[in-house]
Length: 526
Image 1 (cartoon, one colour):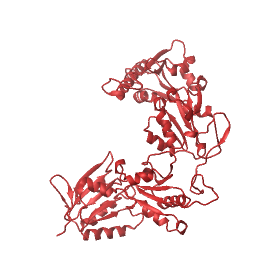
Image 2: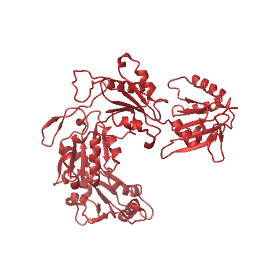
Image 3: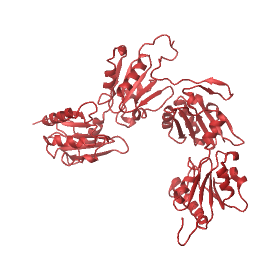
Image 4: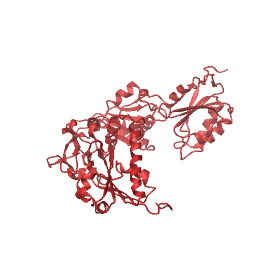
């Protein structure tokens, strides 16, 4: 940065050092370190800097060193802003220290273990200095790349997906993500290790998970996660789970001998109950179609919770599958939002082969959910022997109505505004019929990015037969942290405020709002 009062400033460099072996420092990083005016590095309280140890052999004579010592790394702090506040103040003061050198025209190199922008502290100083001074970032070999090399574990091949996860994630979330990926890297271990190990077991990935400690350093070691003493795990440790553990050629055990890896099953492959003879067809199993409710775990019915705890396969739209906790022995089959029949056929194929399968839907599976798609696909004679059972759930309609009071206490109708499976002309015809019949109306799928205007069109159709003062309830994300409930009128409804997260309840002529704001529709009609 150049100003009239300060025409020349130093350059700020974020330099990645790699995982620990000085020989893994790039040529560019080495050049910048050896010519720096100021070298800065982080260190823990009462500890020496690992970054300095890696790069010390490159420090030029007379270089100015700035050790940035964290005020706290884990545990508690008496800072009024807590842990986050303590670190924010630390980064501000560290940035000020480095800015003083830059303003004096000195080039500053900030050392970063691994890569500067991968779970590193450099980025927080970059946020504060990157736009004020000429800045360059030099990438480094990330620690997980060194860990994979040490164990000779190919993380991913071809179209595999690699997921990098912090061990600080909630255990259930970590297990879900491990089950839904091909290769995985888990960082930030230490005290999180016991929960991480349980998550690996729940996801069925423990057997092929490898623990690597201090990758590329003289004291490096690696062994199966199952064999690790939880009390011995330092921060500088990583877990790698390669994609070959699910499919592909072969995996290696710690003795270096090749051992076959279990193959990931696809929907085209025959399946059977564990221990069954693959040459002998299994008896079809009952296919369960389960409503998960609108969102909160306490709105999942005991029956639904029980059957989800017994199945071996979970099939559904990805966000709904994600709501079911991962556990050992559960295989997840998540897919997009417009392939209902494909999902249903996959589930029926699995059940026909004797696998215990649940297809999941949000809300109630029978209300614009997967129950209809499953029964439609089940009409194929190939699935004649597969029994199907629908397990009910609390619908979004029930949740919004309960929050509002009792707006559907009398006769009511339920409609979806989506025209993906029926023409808009039919939707308009049914809206007019409901209005003429003076029924309260629950509206699902009121708007989306592809059809933002349909709620406005529906409003106009309803106003042909309903008063503008007709009560309307708009429930958004009901049952979740971002829940909101708005009571308005048909005339005052703003279509621009409605999206797919909303469910609308349009009252009948008798629907009213009492003095406490509760909406209810009388059971009687005069």
